[in-house]
Length: 330
Image (cartoon, rainbow, N blue to C red; front, side):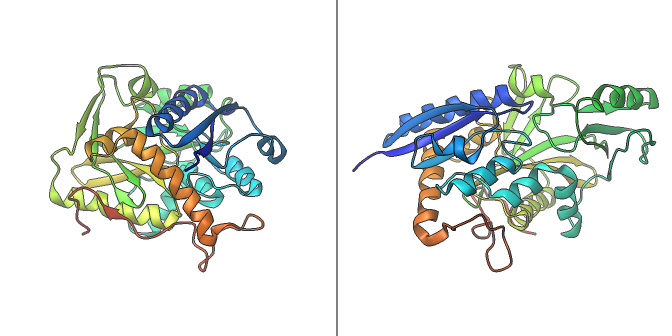
């Protein structure tokens, strides 16, 4: 049986480029470990359909994080290219990257999420303290500032407004940070993140070795069910495909949805690989299954002559989500 030729894309023009390079290298290594693949690693910046067409591979595994690589533009290019690819299609990618848009989906579904506002330069923040200032479209806690005073809000805005096209303010929820991955429509075990720093920032995620990760943490059954229900509903309604990661804060009121990532990190510090391993799925198996799944979609007549966004008769998602762990729907 001939090997499958896989083009692993990494890099990109976004703030999370370095994490993408690490993630992409690990995905490429995992595919080689799994066997049955010829792997082509390609570091990119921005690229066009013409650029992508010159690159080898029968299937594309994009491992990019940020507005271009994860938030829709690269997905548009891959749709036009026509080869099967891993991950969400353009509309779902855009919605997941846009924190305000994904929160609107949560609100519409009756899922608890902290109040938030898009910031307009020169206008006051219409939320009480404490709050969080962060980019509407970025990940890995890039540009996230916790603010407990008006002076801290002013300083955060002065620092971030020149750097990011759009900022938001969100009510600060202080409690336990819980994340859950979705892999091939299945919920992976929950993880509680305990950072030694003020919060789970970029350094705590990727540079430090003193962040604690508690697999299947003890949670009230009502909270566990709430997180599982919210994860299934948002993954399906936003239209994510193949994999995703959802982040929550838990306080005395229950679970609060923060954001969804349609291409979560794939480094040795990343949460989806940790959760998959806890469920008995090796990183090599994760990458191999995602690659074969994208090929199977193409063979199942999912290929289109031109990019077509999801409608009620052509959903971007595959099927309802089911649990790997013991979580129960409320």
